[in-house]
Structures are given as structure tokens and as C-alpha cells.
Length: 368
Image (tube, rainbow, N blue to C red):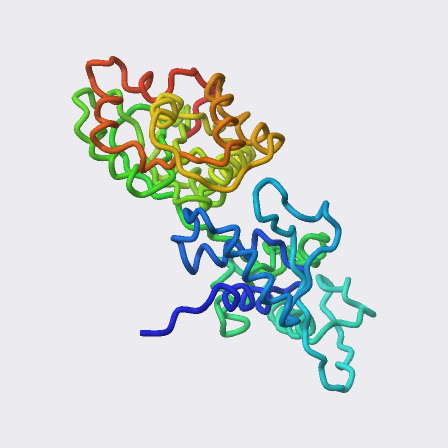
């Protein structure tokens, strides 16, 4: 068994692998959560991340913003918006040879490239010379393996200065596309709604209840959101709908009542709308039940930040959520036990959809 890496080592590996020296903090946090999923729900996760960054700063591996406005103060301890890698001095090397770039890479003419970028564009130049511009679109990791022998070599390229600046196109130059982890969906019934649940225990509890619901026509789809990954996995839903031929008029969401969970679902809702899907609607019937459960202590959220993320919830739930966050508490889905959830969702209470969410969503045009 391999020895678990420390958090500072995980962050340093992501820093070193990133194509840019200045790396968004969210990118570093995502690497930490991927390596250790339990960190996502740890009350001390901000402190762990702050401590790991401090270790890397003190050892000269990175530098952090100096200006206060470049730090996130919505909870304690504050966390930076970015970290900048400090590369060790390089030995003197001869200047890389000037080469002739294909027309699609003519923006490189006359530019002095870093060794990393020179390697990238040299391989890409050869690919395009070999008529790669007409190649079939493939997943980005497939293309990375083809060109560099390492499927992760191009991870993060979508955040590079070349792509963000509009010079390099993943589709047109690399003939590739991103492949986010698919949304894990179970089709329980024919109703045209989808309920996304953030955590595994709550997902399993709802699956047990809904698959035995006595009125199958009231049940729709159930999906596992997997924490902050919902913001990317929601983009895979159109393909699933196209493959099944199903119609979807509403997407409900039920997650933890904490700052990170609410912030993430707002982003996921924006992305859902941007690809032609309905926005994510709060399953307020479940949130109302969750608010009656035991709270846990955590870092205090500023009133401004609490108002921003709680605005996604309907009143009066939003006001209650603001009070929870500003008092330094959260409510996890696991606090609503299976036995209590069965009392919330029961056929004797009427239509299932109305029990899940009493606030009617503006579903708009059905999506299929």
C-alpha cells in the first residue's frame, strides 16, 4: 500500500502540472477533493487548505496574493483567489530554434516560447501538418495520449492563456472535447422531473423510498450529484436525454445547507440554463425538513456571502439559511435520517412532486 500524500504535496503536484504559473485556488482545491473526497465534508477543510498553502509559501514553492481583496473572506480562515508557482532557477540553455508554423498556428510567428509551450506547439504543429485539422473529434485525454504519451498532459489547457486569449481552440486545433464525469442517474418513473441529491447516504435513502412509491406515474429520475462535481456533470445531461428520448421539464436539487453546497448549486444552475436545460429548483419540501434537524458548528459566513448563496432558496427558507450560516453552523443531509425522511415523503401526504417541492418552478419548454 502506498503512503498517503500530505495535502501540501497534493497541492504542489497540481501547481507543477498546471500550464500556467498562477493557478486559481478552485483548481487546487479540486485536486485536494479528488485525492481525498472526505475533505469536502470536513468542517476543518478551509483550515487544512490554508495550512497546506502556508507550508508551501514558507518553503518558497509558491507565493500568495498580498492585497486583501484577492482573498476570500466569506469564512475563516480566509483563502486566496490564486497561488503562483515559484519555479527554481533554470540552468542557462541555448535559445530554442525558430521554426515554421502551419497557418493555423501563425499567431506564434516571432514569439519567444517557453520550453513547455515550445514542446506543446511543436507536437501540435506536427499533428496539423499530418492533416490533423480534419481528424475526428475525440476526448481531450485521448488526444493528449496520442500527442504526448500522457493522457493527463493537456489537463487544464482550457484555463491556459492560449485558450482563454482566443488563440488556441481545443475543438479546431486539437480536434478534441472535454469529457466531464457523467451525471449518475437512475430512471425510477415516467414523471418529467429529475431530483439531484448531493451526498451518497441521502441519495440511497431517497432511492429506497421512491422505488417503492405506490404511484409510479408520480416518480421521475433520481441522480447523485457528488458534491461540487455537479457543476460539470450537469453538462452531460443533454446527451442522456437524447439517448433515452425522455422529456424533462424540471430539475430539482437537494443538498447540504452550507456555503459550499449552495454556492456550487448556483453555478450548476447557471450552466444548466446555458446549455438549454431548466434551472435547478430547490426541493424545498426536503430543505424545510432538513432545517428542523441537528446543526453542526463550522466557520462563520459573512452576512453578504450568506445572502448571496441563500438567495437560491425560496422565502422563508432563505432567511433561515442566512441565520444558520452567519451563526457559524451548517445542516448536513445525513441529519435527516431515513426513518424521518419516510415520514416526510409518504403517500398519505398527497402528490409526490408537491411533497418534494411546494414552490412551482417555471419549467418553460420541455427539454428532450
